Image (cartoon, rainbow, N blue to C red; front, side):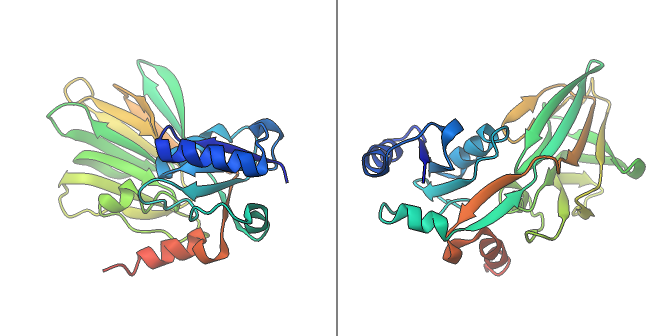
Length: 251
């Protein structure tokens, strides 16, 4: 099995990279059957973005903090672990942001967010599949999260956890002011979201697709790109579906 090891820029990850390379060799990612990511969830997100054009399965081992998207770190019998792993296919979100009449694109595996840029709250209009569902939302921001990303920033913003395979996306407000009691919505993954920025000169807004930020946007469109499929590999006892399910019962 041709394995390519990539590591976060930490002492622990670099040490693991050296040990695993000595034991198993290290193919270049373009020629590998599986890419092994050594680090935390942030580095796994970076590795997934790098694999979009290759389609190579990724098996992560946690050398970070939470490690929600990774397996436990161990050096023994790695090819056997990978052969027995459960695959999970993820579809990212496409973002098209309008800035001064020009479209700029982004791609998100976890979520697409819009945020106020100044001390003044953002004023947003929400369209779903061409229908205005909320004429004005005054808030710090708004996000659209995938199932894999629903346990990240979305959960911190009091959004719902979404089981894998549910074909749903979460639309979650960030510190809503008006209407104050609106807590967001669950929409089919085929939905097309459009967020119109009201009063953009007075209340400027930025858009962020994972770690790609575009400032001073006037309109943001978001949809799931099913033409792209990213494959993660999980040990059977640490599969992502089970982790997402368990998160819903954490007190």
